[in-house]
Length: 406
View 1 (cartoon, rainbow, N blue to C red):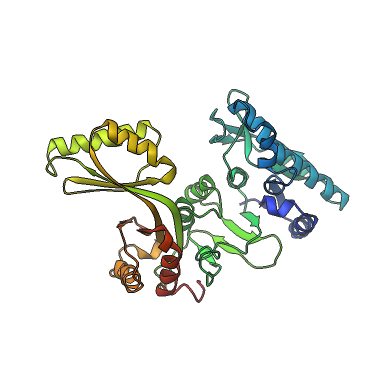
View 2: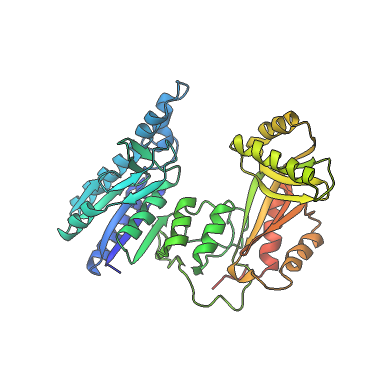
């Protein structure tokens, strides 16, 4: 690997003088260690602060939408942030230069507001680093193959950092925010949540796929596929953070790694009207899947059982799916106000008794499980939304996550 280190700083890290001072100290530490830092920065602050993305977008709120111009306007916050950081680093004697996503060589497809990175050509960044300059790259943005500025979706600065890390063959990609690392649960939901020392890339991907916002989902997916080492840290502390890397041997003493909850779930039960296994039954399923897919709705926890089909959708899609099923003239039951609580752990695969360790404490706490689903590294339970927090607390304790995780 090269001696490049990609350091991504989120909005809460660059919005204050304290955060920018901490950023400069970390850059100086890397330079003194003969590393070549490349910075990726988000827009400064959150809604209400003058240069936050949502604040910038508010200037056209209520006016006819234009996706291309949405990308132009929403990218401005990162430009302001990169220029500000570069100026302040130079003021501290650290030679730095701001780069847009396009100047950094990030090429995307033409999808407005949620573009996908196709390639990265970091020649300009390498040249700057060879001249002793610290590149400060605007996160969240790139240039499409047709020459339009594009953005990568909310949280896209994480993906910028991971993509640059792969392209530069960086020794590590450091993701800085205002938390100490990836935690065993959301500390706002589970007071006993602990920082995880080491996490498998697939575990990180499953965490964000199931609802955690610790990093951008495409960034976690890229880390999983590329093998780039991640380090999730706190800008404001010296906590060692969470290392995300592949481990040769799975943890022997732990089954679960983390728990995540996702609220706002609706479950549908559809009466297929045909005997299970017959061609008409399968055709009915296929017609439902096709109609919902054409409406750009994502299905989850879908399970055929007898002559019924069970599945869940985000609550925002409830009315759309109900209309589709009505048009298909099928009998339907709909239950809103549910939540999905997911236990994640690469060591769970093939271990007998894991489901009983989940079901038993929930039953003892009087929490009904409406449905379950699992994969090689996850077990999800569907519960009432009002019981989701309690379910996370109960499982966090039952699965021995309260005392920390190694």
